[in-house]
Length: 284
Length: 271
Image 1 (cartoon, rainbow over the protein chains, first blue to last red):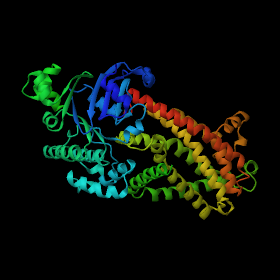
Image 2 (image 1 turned 90 degrees about the horizontal axis):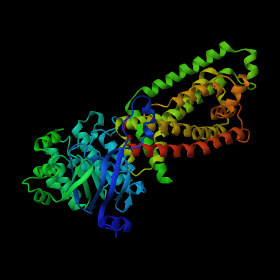
Image 3 (image 1 turned 60 degrees about the vertical axis):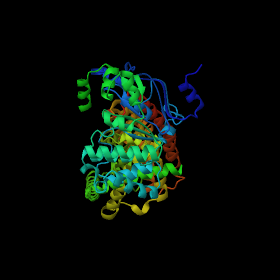
Image 4 (image 1 turned 135 degrees about the horizontal axis):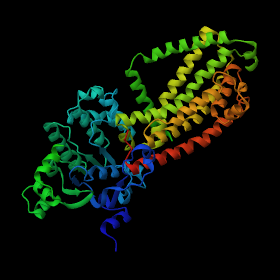
């Protein structure tokens, strides 16, 4: 009678860290002129997420793959309680994102993919300490964790400098530290290595794989355009196209399904994009 | 409750650290307050007349009257402006979303963000009055400080609701609230900042009695200049608290609704 996803939501006890069921999200069209005044009350008509259902099991890493505008960031922002879904359900560790956002936030670490989001006049360490305390970490825990993570992310010197003096890549590393600082059960990362140099990105991937996924058993849902990163980190890949989930499976399953040699070819085949347009997407 | 207070203090510490990274401005503000107090002193000497003295409470100079009015009008500014400004800063620096995915509740984020501006305003008011007492004969010794503190708390609580309303508007429409400036403008006339409201036309006096600013200034002047006891200022104090009881929860509800709209429309971080 019920789908497995619905049953998981109803029971609140399941082995899934994230359960998304028939999720919908639309945005209103941008109004101009005097109508802009009515923008906050406009009906949402532009569909960004269309009936997505997906589960992420505890300790599992799932990648969201899709071209720009496919709905990856919107999906992550709904799970991070920064957007309200228009229909369907999304549940994180048994808590509904629309009805119990505070409880959801207690389980989450979120990185928005941007290289902003810090107080320019505070040092990196002061920023991390502030956000860590807002996540109710004690001073003693912060004193131990911030230097340890700073060393892992090669931020030992940078965290002593004001955030305004740091490069975009360094701020992004700081943002990733902020996301994992409180050792959340579920980690949502939007293009986590976008501004990182090749070595920094590789270090971060190793950290995610060994420390966060294997050691801490954190569940990870991340959006990325970097296919080797996806193949290295993800247990499964969810392919989105125009707000819809068009395929989900392990990288090997997706390649088999598409009869492709590489994940890139499989993605191109499943979504109907050419390889050239994919390269443009990855470089954008 | 204790956790919420601790979280609010974190915001205060953050703002203090940011402010202390800019050295100098606070010292300049102290000097600026000296010029402000001096200006009121000399204007008061210039405009002093028997007619003016008749309109003021007995034994109170126009200098003391206007200095209290001007200094405490700052609270209104701080209240309606601080919520907006902290929200705007969070949006512009990209810290709004990281704040909203932490474990602190929205009221704590809001209240915590205005703790420092309110403290700074209190210090500025103290400096104004301090210069007035030190150099220009402001009657500091007449004050009933317990009453003044009670009025201060009631004033902050009642004005804060106005600020939360204003930030709800900013959240929805992305621009500063024009009603805020209208309110500040009207309050500067009918609030009794520089002249007693008894000199206003009858209909403006009615408007004045609908405005919490006039009660706050009346009570503060009575406490500071006449040494009025808590019992003596009970009426304006209760009216201020009534404003707070109505405005604070209503404004929080409106803000929550505005936040929900931005989460529906996806405009939370839009400028």
